[in-house]
Amino acid sequence: MIKKRVLCDHCRGSGAATDGDIHSCPECGGSGVRIVKQQIFPGMFAQSQVTCNKCGGRGRIIARQCPACAGQKVLEHTAQFTLDVPRGAREGHEVVFEGEGDESPDWEPGDVVLRGVDEVRRTVSKTKVLRILTWAFRFPSFPPFPSPPGFSWSFGC
Image 1 (cartoon, rainbow, N blue to C red):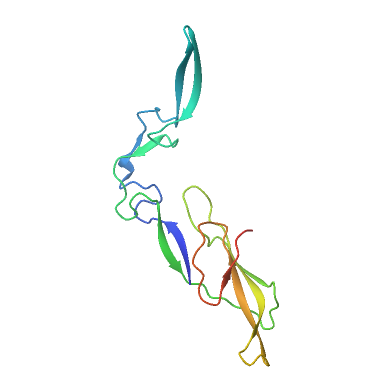
Image 2: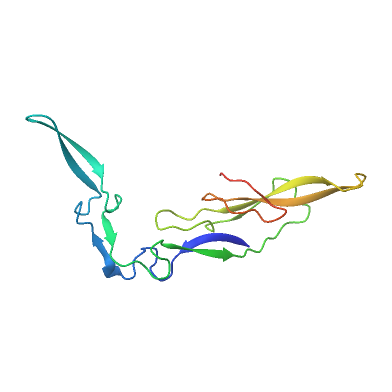
């Protein structure tokens, strides 16, 4: 089982309670930026463009947040995958679950890639050597998740 983020079913990733609760930002007029004039010396001004403080550069504000996700747009979800490992799989064998990474309204979900890692573990008597095939998870999204016992995480695609 893997914890991942999915779009909120209630607001469909908008973060607002209803579609009517999304308004254009009154501070920047919906552009996400403001023009700031600064006097350099008498009669001379400099103009600069800055990100709007009220909307954070998005150009719209939410009057009432979604009650299900509290305006976060995504919810934590535990996904269960069925992993079919072919007999005799060697180190480096990868199983890819396409489009099963973290979801967000800002990007397409990535892939979950499971890669076989061959580990050698010695027993207490140090006479027997056990070869254990474990799996390393790769997520193209962040933050890293806590590692279950016996598993190692590796990030990056």
